[in-house]
Image (cartoon, rainbow, N blue to C red; front, side, top):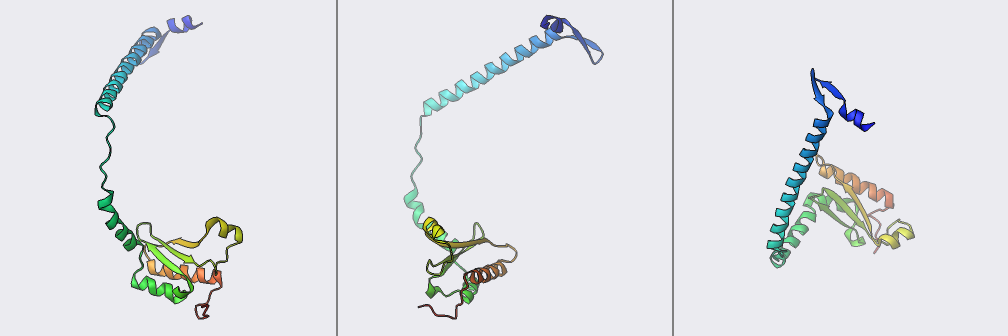
Length: 163
């Protein structure tokens, strides 16, 4: 059955083309491409074997000190952000907040004594962090709304002194 299909001639663009010649050309093309690929892989293997594994230069001692400062600067609150946070929460009660400038996320850490998480969540997470992606066009407004929402969720009133 295959021989009859291979021997048939098909018309393509008004000329006769033999299926046998097309199959031969395709096989030659595949062999040629496989040979080229093998050559390229061989060259790459020799380059890797000659160079060996290079160890990266250790500059960690030079970068660690500035990196910590940069992360603290990125996560610190500006004066207006601090005012908005302290309008709703008293830091003396154990509330903390930070704003990650790179990720544009505002986070409030709720003390475990005031957290309304269930016991399973408390044992699993060991801290209560409330984070929100802040609207880039209205950063202060988003922070204000988030503080208000978290405050309502906790039924927290800053005017009531806990300590």
